[in-house]
Length: 422
Length: 133
Image (cartoon, rainbow over all chains, first blue to last red; front, side, top):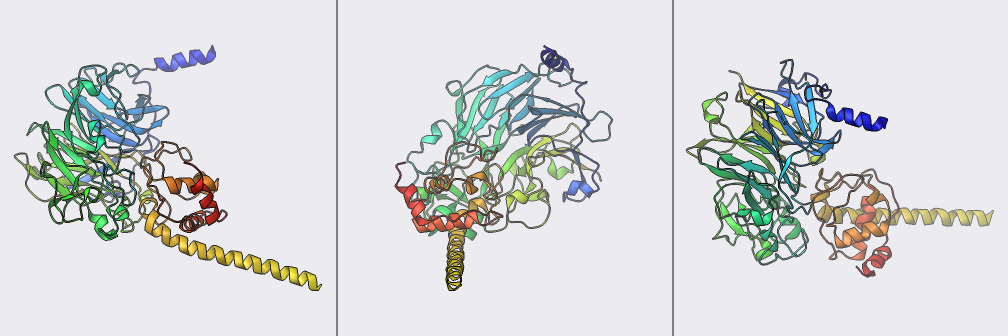
């Protein structure tokens, strides 16, 4: 009985009363929280040691929702506030007893995903969740075969939500990731994964039959964003792994560390990016037939597949995409794309790289220059060989109401706020 | 007295031989590791957080030999936690490696990265390979 009363009491704790100090963050002596930034930019770590922070959404009030891929005190979503105005989170309210990656705010609702479902929570006029224990389940039954399992989300302005369903394989081989194992033809994964699915943002309990396979041939997308200038969906694909491991007579380990590109695509209904039949070679600037389907590193393929909008170096693992619409950053950043790269593993035995946030300038909805490193040294600075040595790994991006850029990290659950001061 | 010396001699030579054959197996195993395993499990055996499990001080590596032999041979696609952590990537099958190569690489892994466990023999690999899947 006592236990029950205690439980009932806990449930009644109100939003504001559920205050806990952010014990993880002490004002760091490190300049810019250890990050390397362009001149004029500063970074502050506003929170740390709470879950495994994946994607992030910031309200118009400047408060933060973070989705975690690990439960912390039994919760998987964290609503963070800075009450005393010192720039550091000092109140964290946890809710949602599921792990996952996706989170977004649209038209008075907070959307969040597990690795199989998408939920939404009604927000009040302060953008706070009204009923944290009773979300509406809008999408259910999505495939999760533990590889590329995260379900990232983005919403358009016509009441649709886009969900990534990653392929549960590296290259659709008969035996996944195995030496000389051939590709299955046609690849049976593509009927229910390896693409982006479109659902209604306000309809409950939708599953495959209710949605549309909006785009296919995408091995795994973690970072995606709706571009309001072009009114189209842009995605970042994680390119395939293990060209050398599986086809050592065709690719040496140095080539395998650079191939294939991590690619950005602008999607339309019916788009096809070509996985698993082809990959994009950023050195030859060509779509190359995958060795699982008879390729040799030179034969071109994918006549029906679209070319990438931008090609980045291999294996850097793009985990978030954000089109910057703020006014705080210098003019060149307006409408450009920020990409959070989680950092490589499949470059070994070469040193790892790509634990950074990149930027691509855009004009009129098209890239207008080369990609560049925006924020670097998340991993800790020095060259290193083993991903488990990385101190932080960028995973999520959001824009604050003042035009600041928020970056999450899923090693220590850190949240960074990057601002521009002339 | 003579007998004791002789026995001691045999014991030390047996130990020496064992150490030598362990060293030889480790050396061969390291080559297999670098060719086949390193790209996912890394040079330091540290693996990749949440994707490819570490090989240092884990119950799978240090525990039942037949279990780890089976995983090397037939890969792993099940979602099961390894020391309370889940790892997303599937592991490839390695039926192309012979019994001695698998014995060597497992002996290397079980005695590297801070691990210390008994060697794996080709006969032990053969026994697992011949078992029905």
